[in-house]
Image 1 (tube, rainbow, N blue to C red):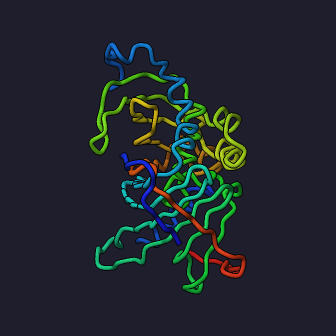
Image 2 (image 1 turned 45 degrees about the vertical axis):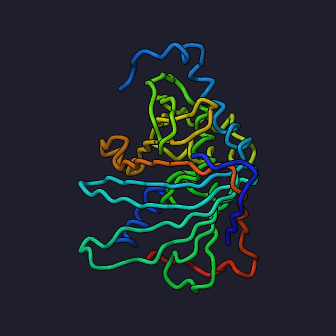
Length: 285
């Protein structure tokens, strides 16, 4: 599905809750002084421009980690793949954890990410092995920020367009690359309003669906403003019924980490043909 070639430049380095839980069930400081060279960098502007900088860069390799904590249970899903930021497409291999007993392996889920759509293979009971399941991301209450078990890398960067209260934490390092560490919160409605056309509908869905409109984030940018790591902390409620019973926001917490590296390699992500998409009913497995 994805072909990589040597590039011209060297490589550098409660619907949403149900959907995330379905995957899980299927698997069973702030502050600090800035260095002199950083004092002229506006933290908010640097973070707001992160998505555009990725698009200019073109492509990268990706590693994702998504940890869900709910009711004393903590489960982590890992993903790895590639992304074409100009086309807005990516491919990830998402690996589910073992069952609670630890004695069952699960087939990896292949995910194709595209503007407005998520395609999954090996996901859902009764789906033929050669078929893909297609999901309209704007129909998901979280806009697919967590549903697929991995946050779309470009969407993760687009969220930063709504960054507020941004502070410069200090120098850091990600996979051997020197970075600047910024921290703040994302205003989901502002992010949706400022998003590129291909991401706007999904972020609008997320802005309506989350219990809180503010999402804490940490981002690590290199000296050219290129993202190397993004962390978001999403909080889901148990729904309106839960709030009426006095339940607070963030009953389920999802910590999403996206690592980007190997920039500039040629990547091609091909989406499934219409005949390869499963048209029947999909059940959780």
